[in-house]
Image (cartoon, rainbow, N blue to C red; front, side):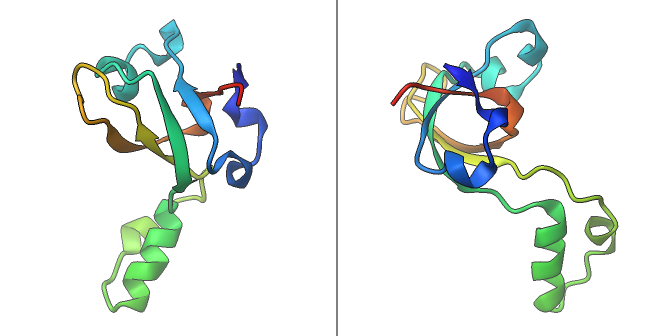
Length: 102
């Protein structure tokens, strides 16, 4: 396994990943609920991208527009776990992920 944050976001789409469980991720939602593995579905929209889409639709989003561009989060289809027996979809930072050997 290697950290997913070493790769560009677009290269992670379709890859199997594990959620980091070390002490640095103690307070992350993925660790709190016990997510272990999943598959990257797509790159999530940044807040700035969401603001542009909202404004194109006539909805003002000034607080989102003023936010700095951030590293995009990854949209993951998490595998089933005890707290989510059918799995779930979640957006997480790349730094929370490990790339599994395919």
